[in-house]
Image: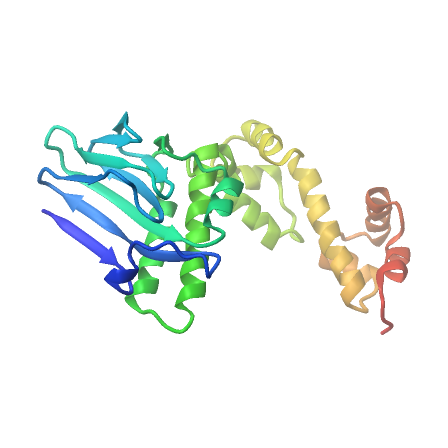
Length: 283
């Protein structure tokens, strides 16, 4: 069944080059077609065009170069890039797309190092689809914050494509496997967290968890937890008048003397001295 979801404030704004703002979304949407179709633009658009293929296969020509466009791939076309695409072998096609512009659009793409004019394979990432739908929601109920919010959602979307293209924090990456566990550690750092418990959250063995953790974070689970506790201790030393004993207990150290030894080893000074050196006010 054919389905087109098209989101734009006005049709006249759907293909514009805009230098008066850093970033702007011209239009976005979803294409789902069961019939044969093609789209040709021999001179290219005036804005950036990003296509993310979810289902089916397409013949894609960019600057006259042919690509076999497959599900799980995306392509970013800069302004004024000639292109043509059509569904392949009468297949059903489903893809997400967005057009955007702005004075900083090109700079953002350069900083994110998103490949252009060539399809990049990132597989089908649910979190990217969710980012698209959040962008759609901005067009469904636009308000006085639309320009700012839609551009923020676009940055999030493009960042997710960049991470996926570089293999960083995709849903299939090792980094992604640890995301929920690291979130848990940051919320429960003052509790007695064992490697066995953390490995269970990651759904891997203790041995593999240790290897995975070091590969992703560059440190061990114990070192990471200690560093996390000490960073929060520094915040309490700076922002509160709690005693050293109270701070130690607040971040997960039951022994004040041990806390002080670990703190000195990590920062080269005592907790009390740290407070005196960094506190710009008195309680």
